[in-house]
Image (cartoon, rainbow, N blue to C red):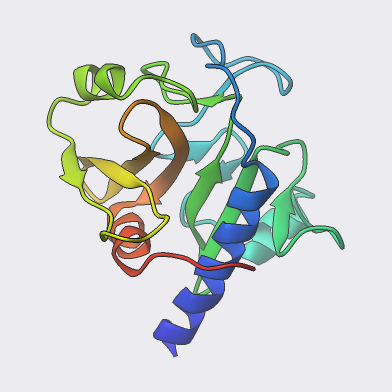
Length: 176
């Protein structure tokens, strides 16, 4: 059952990836700001959507909604964030520009800056002859940032539980 759930989750993440796949310049960095400017995501989650929160709780608070144009649920006010749930709990957030880590890493940031900000990040090589990105997994306890990159710049950022981020990278993803 978990393998089927992960396949569904992977499909949702690809939809999020395709929705925001345009190349964008590096977003602004700095402290958390209102939606529309760079917003900081910590390893706890967003200010109104923390990792481990149930789908029902986020729906009750008016944060989670289902959009006909989307492949899965979305977070109200966060068009550049796609939530990923496993066993009814928020486990990962798939991020796009203008989201930022507390260290100012955004989509479009040079990989060298990621390595400087997260010196203990683990290098992850995408399988050869695939269209997948290489990754850097920056772990802190049971949480992590997964930075998918093309060798030069960050293309996607995933934040959440480290084991789920590692599993996403290992198993890859496919079209929605």
